[in-house]
Image 1: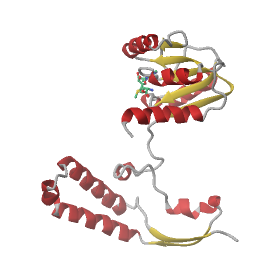
Image 2 (image 1 turned 180 degrees about the horizontal axis):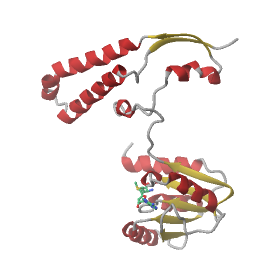
Image 3 (image 1 turned 90 degrees about the vertical axis):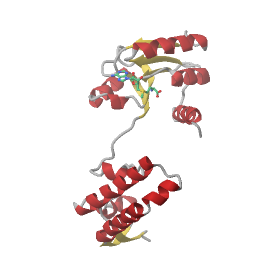
Length: 232
Ligand SMILES: C[S@@+](CC[C@H](N)C(=O)[O-])C[C@H]1O[C@@H](n2cnc3c(N)ncnc32)[C@H](O)[C@@H]1O
């Protein structure tokens, strides 16, 4: 899927998650950028929308595109910050945001503001790049993992109602495996380059593997053979 299609698919998915989105709905997009999402949402549902954004340059473009799309009367574009939303309490059915809240170092405040401007029963629908809830970010960076389980996670998988019969810790194997792959990569570096792999790609991969080895060395990684049972 190309970028534009993926974007539209995200917007459509977010819309589909919202029950009762229709002509009577009021939607606020915080950190709206150039407003493409709200043009799609308003165009599809007939709702009215407000785009709140800190960038006047983006807001001007947004307004021009809304006029072009003949949606100027249904979408207001407001200059402001989402830490201090310039709207009354309980004024929106939906607060919408895509990849913007990360720009705030006051996420609690943003969420409190979202809470304040939402009507009772209203929805917050959003996407946001986040760090994994763990210490292993350098490990996640290759190959783009979001998080890893842990021995405790699996031990506590009673939440999934499994009985945990065994967790045989074999973490050393993992360290060895990563170190071996790193060695092999180093040994075949020139050949891989000749075959078209970019130096940036190979270097990133090497660093990723080194990070895994280091993480294993300091006890941040674990590996185990685990045996679970679904209770009868
Ligand atoms: C990565 S862009 C995403 C834009 C849009 N939501 C999208 O998905 O195309 C982040 C947006 O957040 C806006 N922004 C950053 N900090 C903000 C703040 N404190 N209050 C309002 N908007 C903010 C930026 O101007 C930018 O338009």
